[in-house]
Amino acid sequence: GDSVTQTEGPVTLSEGTSLTVNCSYETKQYPTLFWYVQYPGEGPQLLFKVPKANEKGSNRGFEATYNKEATSFHLQKASVQESDSAVYYCALSDQGGSNAKLTFGKGTKLSVKS
Amino acid sequence: AQTIHQWPVAEIKAVGSPLSLGCTIKGKSSPNLYWYWQATGGTLQQLFYSITVGQVESVVQLNLSASRPKDDQFILSTEKLLLSHSGFYLCAWSLWDSEVFFGKGTRLTVV
Image (cartoon, rainbow over all chains, first blue to last red; front, side, top):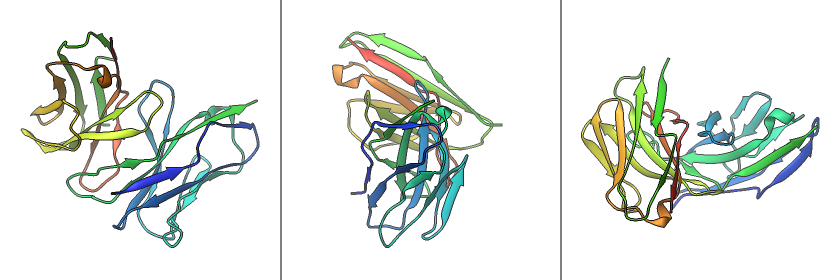
């Protein structure tokens, strides 16, 4: 079956420093890749998605490139803010159509200190 | 704009008692609907999906059932709760072949 492996947390950074959360995946299909962010007590929110290999997705200063050869989709941000503190999930969907079933990684908890 | 409302926000229930959780999606016609479960501190796992009224497919067997009585409503239930049912239940929707949007979730504690 499909699987997603991402950086184990928690990750603690100071404001203004850079972030990289590694994500690698396994699937026999041609997936769409996602990054979701979850704040305490809330459901995950879509950060961005990338449906095609070698394309980049971005939102709110976060970005990730779909690397099909390396089966990776690492999340990066050049300068984190305290408000970026949350849990970040890498996910894939390869079923499309009737069931957009998402396979999630275990999540990476990010804490940003001022 | 589309909205997704889940109820209740939180529940504390006894082992062996029944459960009913619900969600309503407004602003989208005939969405695909999903139930996901998240153990405390854990990842998200899809439980059920539905593409139309009256039709629900089970993805994982957890002694839970789901129903879609109306186009905009999705219900998760069981007649007998287990301790292992504790966690965060998330309703979600998508349109055909598009990204998935989640509700704010229901926190369930089984004691």
